[in-house]
Amino acid sequence: MPVVGPPRTEIQARPAPAPAFTGLRVALVDPGDFTPPYDEALARGLAQIGCHVRLWGMAGRPPADPGVAKTCHFYPLGSRLRRAFPEPLRALVKGFEHLPGLSTMAGVLERDGTDVLHIQWAPLPLLDRRLVERLARHVPVVYTVHDSRPYNGTRGGPVLWGLDGFLAAVHALIVHTEEARVRLIAAGHAPARVHHVPHGLIDLGAVAPPRPISRDRPLELLMFGAIKPYKGIDLLLAALAKLTPARRARLRVTIAGRVFMDLAPFRETIAREGLAGVVDLRPGYVPDAQVARMVADADALLLPYRLIDASGVAMSAIASGRPVVASAIPSFAELFGNQRGGILFPPEDIDALARVLADLADRPEQLVPLGRAMAALRAGFPSWVEIARRTVQVYERARETAGLGRAGPPSRPAGALVGDGGSSR
Image (cartoon, rainbow, N blue to C red; front, side):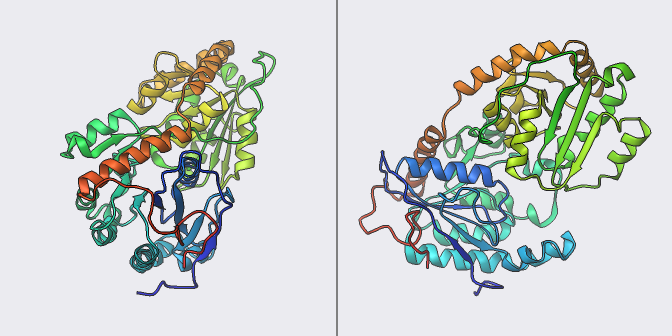
């Protein structure tokens, strides 16, 4: 079936060294560009160990890193409508484009050759299963379960239809936390199919060292990333409202990011509770360079999430050496428990969060040892090269599950799929 709209855009990559050549041709698939920083970091890590990688993503969304080979393929019409039409209409258009996009991509992969299909997100699993079934007879198919509770429990409908069948059809599942692995096994997935590979650090570039903590200025607390219900912004505002005026005056809270929910209740709370001088609400997309500047100005990052498996924001906090104030959900407890760079409070406990914020206002110097602990955590975190090696091990397990034997360097020249400047046509 033809793709709706204009031809996809090819973003070609610079040649990358292959110090530990594996020869695997890997297709990374994230149709809606849900996690570009993760996708590109993994692609770079795989390339560094010798894999030939092409990322398949959304039309009109070139990679932030020109060294990543990307085919800007999915939703060419929906991506062009994103500023002109409301979200429900754009979602409907993208839904109609999804299956033709899968079909065309599958044809390219079959014709040009790939050794591994690694799906990052399955926006419509009922249709995505057809891609898996078409290719799984010839190549191992791996799926990264970024959310072991799909969409963190905030969405239903077509995005969940057929999810169980899709998960059962792939050869291997990757999760980012041990807690998520346990949950999938408890849901009936064979332990041998579920593999724990950590989420790597998200590098924001050159972020300045933290400023000295001083009682002469308010503490700068930052919450950035997609504004969604599970992030717990309402909990944060309710906790701030419990503070005395004197303690509020010692805090400045910035909340910034793309908006995926109604902000009116937040604005009402800010006005009603007199938080306008404390909270700076900045809705909208934040470019990477601006995120780096905000993190550089922050004394700590706020993660009052209701639940999540892995957080790119948390990985950015570790990479930049900034301590966090986070809910003690299992994934954050794995990362930051026992004072490893964070202050944890019980999830959805507004009073507990208010006590943490009050204590920070009274004793801001407690962030100094937490910052040192965060730097130590960063130093011990696996690199993307190590994460890529572990990912390739999952590819090998997936090949065995699929009954395809062990993978080896390709016997034919790397072609359109590879990240070597070739065309994917």
